[in-house]
Amino acid sequence: MSRAYVHGYDRRANERLHDQAASLVELLHWDTSFPAGSRVLEAGCGVGAQTVTLARNSPDALITSIDLSEASLAQATRDTEAAGLTNVQFLQADIFHLPYDAAAFDHVFVCFVLEHLARPIDALEALKTVLKPGGTITVIEGDHGSTYFYPDSDAAHEAIRCQVELQRAAGGNAMIGREVYPLLTAAGFNDVRVSPRMVYVDSSKPALVEGFTKKTFTAMIEGVREAALEAGIVDPGVFDRGIRDLYATAASNGVFCYTFFKGVACRRG
Amino acid sequence: MSRAYVHGYDRRANERLHDQAASLVELLHWDTSFPAGSRVLEAGCGVGAQTVTLARNSPDALITSIDLSEASLAQATRDTEAAGLTNVQFLQADIFHLPYDAAAFDHVFVCFVLEHLARPIDALEALKTVLKPGGTITVIEGDHGSTYFYPDSDAAHEAIRCQVELQRAAGGNAMIGREVYPLLTAAGFNDVRVSPRMVYVDSSKPALVEGFTKKTFTAMIEGVREAALEAGIVDPGVFDRGIRDLYATAASNGVFCYTFFKGVACRRG
Image (cartoon, rainbow over the protein chains, first blue to last red):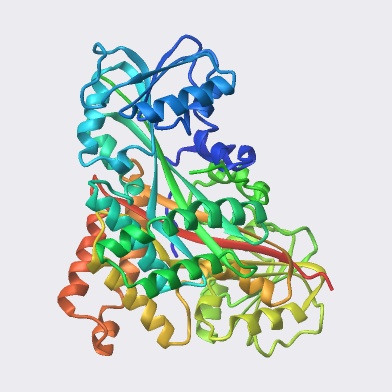
């Protein structure tokens, strides 16, 4: 293939990436930290899966983590307290009806949230109103359409399609990762920089084979079996063969690929 | 998603990758250079698209570049001479009938070649015989199944499928990139390390939009139009819509992703 310039690659975000990434958490989060005293809104914290990392990486920032679910917030509160973190406040709140003044935050952080929303641009615009001019937003999303593997398998792609279709039926988008750049741009953010975070797994990486291919991705797809059969969107034999084939990509000659996308953008005006 | 260790990521190959990659050529080749005096076989050099880079990156290595096609070798010879390179010898030869003694080379380099071979493992085994114990093999391949984009388009995937099917009909495999690890392993190489080289393109990277999305990838797919129609594997309207949709991924809100795979392995015994 011919020569093409790679200008604009997010160099700072990438140069130390693999050097520092000892875990998937680090692959996604190593380059996010906020200064002492800065006010950070984590929108859609859920059970706090990212909150502990966020708070640890920015020990002197003041983090406010919101979610719609009281039950999730209770779990997140327990986990951050158990981790000894004291720089996080939790609040039950809706991204579309934020109980904050304009420009109340220096930074906004949104991870694995837009994939569940029917109107992600509206959500980003709502978050922009509480962000001060000059502040940044950080968005991280996966993309199930970035999944490919060896041995290849039509049944495995069918099983993954079930997850994508069910999420779409619920108003979400499991292939939103590739859209982080256009979404941030459409919402009026500036200086948008997106860097892909590809997880490549072969059997020279046994911890990733177990922790990512099997226990994260395949387990997640396996988890939609009943819903997919109830929805009538797949033949049970095909689905089960798909799951078996996904586990086969974790065998000694198997390969599994998945990519997350991380975008950072600025509110100029 | 849960925590998973990224042990075994090819850190050395990645840590400076994006920092150094000013072009696609650098993305693929920056971390390949061979010591002074080492004997390097480039198998399947074609018209020398990689030979100039290879010879420049290893100015004191002795490079032997072989290909089946006399016409391609003539072009490669002209281009390396025009580039002022004097450390390359060209020879018309067949990977499956190599005119060299066992262990004649310190290193072997194979780029965009296995994708065209019906028996890639046999080719790697043949190359292993002319590699000295302790020597390395470097393999670089693309993977058309790694292609995804925004806006998504079934027609665009159909057009890409034509290229994949035509290459398969010719005995090749346009989705071989993901197989670099299992192929090198199956051929009996050791210490196999594969690193993905993902090209992520959005409109903040105009040189890549032009040089990669449009002039490299989409132009290549567009180039199989007549063959695909002759083979009767696609409706012309679908193909043309697919090409139009691929160009749409180069618009201001578009995103295009493609991944190459680079493997380095050792001949132990």
